[in-house]
Length: 615
Image (cartoon, rainbow, N blue to C red; front, side, top):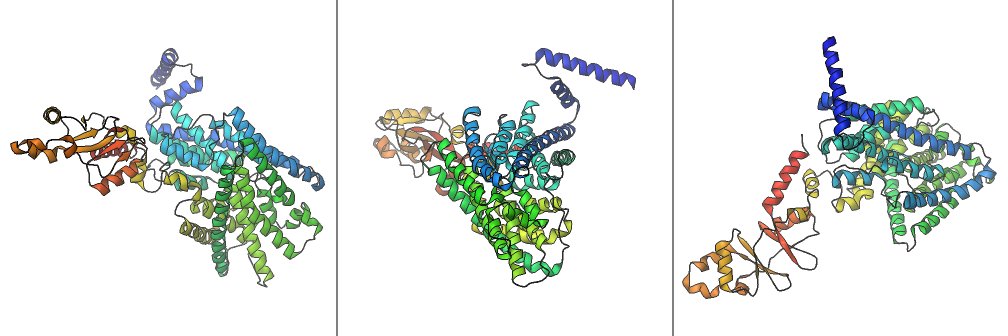
């Protein structure tokens, strides 16, 4: 046994010496150790080890961001009286968005791709390679935005950060596309798990959103990463920072009608939320201003909203916790509504207005130049909606209304409708409230809301544009693989081309010496004039009386379908199906002839991708 241990230690020393000698760059000691472990462990063992390391790292990143933002909010909201808080609400949201924009422009060179769509784009279009800058850029930007009062969530930036950490870990240790995608998803999973202390919700997030259309059989690294991320947040984060709710009612099946109605309301509100987000996105996109000016406009509007309705300041989780703890009067005391008085109808109006305005404040924060996501806004809006619905039921004279339960399941309802992730929403709320006995109402509300959202749009509006452009994967696996192919890579340039004014002798020579069944005919400017098929002219060569008919201009045919060099391969496949052709010509946007694409070239490339992305 001692001889075996000595041999392993000797092999490790030899590996370290050779690595240091022959490596193209000077590696750190832990990298040498991990490369050695990769060489001695099998694939499954190394992926599990990778899941642990990525999970812990992403968990620490999530904890750092949550603690930083929580500390800033604590100073602003707990250490200062409302009269002074007003000045913070005027100044800080404006500074947050403007400062974030300046940081993006000058520190990160204008690279501001953000949100879950950024991860999906990298998976589909960049072989799951995420820029190493995103391992810290999202933390910096979102900490500034949300820490200074931006009305958005930290979970999306945490997920992007985790994805970047997982992707770059895989690149460092030379893992292939499938393993890189798996660790990318593991990093995002750990980030979500640490943000909410909800490991199952983190995994559901990966399955429902990140790995849509991706075929995988190795899920253990995801489980390990989620557990590690959740443990890190559980150990390091204080209880008031964690997304947890202690107060709830026991489930009573007699209350099912409440949940059915709330599910419909959540679905309709989710549609309202995404439409507002889309409108504000288009508004800032079409605004003829510089990025700094847009940030100033957005920051100014957000500051006004936060002054009028302070619960819109930041993520808003503290407000929802206060509602479930029966501290609504304290929330209103920290707003101008304190001068109106604490009455039932005032509370209903106050919460209903902040519920409606949350869609505006979150969208303004994100699209005017801030950094954040829709996790927290959707949860905040759902809790507010559930509370308003509960209060209306109470005012209508209904007894035994499960107020806290309606607040809790309302969060899951709006989140599932906004993010198109019902399973993530169900498990997130169940884990955050330890409310596993609420699974039935959670499923009722989430599925109802999700079904209504899907009725309006089959794809999440946040991702609809990318999906239509074929830049992200959908649930259509064949389409996903085809989207990875590019027209320019499929063009056959070893072709026969003849001028439209060529003589019959030149055509005859090309037919005798050629090895293709089609000939492209071009004019003097290299524009495609038509094509000649050997199947059409072969009978003329064996008919001496038809020799005079061998004129290029008479033989060429205008192609029914032409491929542009900017077409997607999905659209090219449709053109092949509609035309029934086996070869189609490719032209540039200016009409210049480039070459041909054959159906067999697409099929062969598809088979190669299928082998690479399966198993």
